[in-house]
Image 1 (spheres, rainbow, N blue to C red):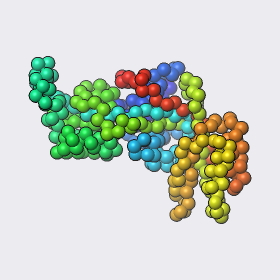
Image 2: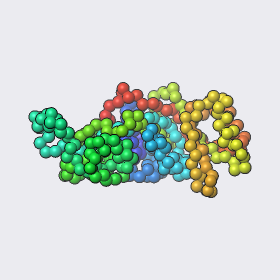
Image 3: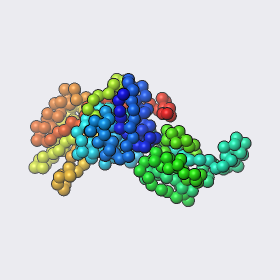
Image 4: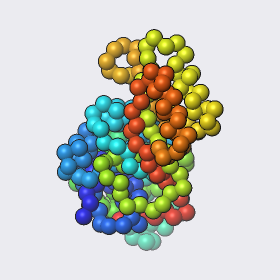
Length: 307
């Protein structure tokens, strides 16, 4: 059985996305939750797990800089796959006493009452709360907000308590795992709230074929070469190699010096990409290949709650 490290506890978006991604993969998989992203990386680097799942970019909030820095500075684990998964957040908790009775529930809805009108505190991570501000402002304007380390940890705390007025923002998987109800589904402000995940580890997993491939590289420019970045970008442009991402990150060695994190839509087996990398190195740039891997877009029509 293959072991996969995820940011825990069970029921986070990372956990849910990993279970969804590997649902049809060959073999058996065990998902191991860790409290901190550093522990997720370390688990695979130390051989405790075969792979780590890392959220790397969100459509609303952009790149997850801390996770990018871990990929660049803290380990040499190659990227083996990439997928996209929707970060669907829900209001999770307990309905008020008496609401569970069918007649009472219908009467309350007919009177304009909602199953979350009694909520006075919402627990979640700052990012999830920020992504649901429109709902919270319109439906629960006076609610108290409390921050925790993960969405699943917020759901777990609500489950462990007895106060019906406390709810959490999290996944449907977390609601099922911790025996709570979805009081309001899909409360995210933006419906295109997708997250890009990468799988890092030494081995390539057994996955379905994908027509899409990417290669991620880190480029460090020579300090005495004005216009070097322009030259680097030109090596891709004239070969018609599409860059899907370019972002500068500090080298942490000297103020004002940066790496350039670049994703290109091309396999490392491509003659064109090999020629481009050779040309970049000829410009006296340092090039580090972070991985060349299949990428899988999300097929929303196939979505189902992962159990």
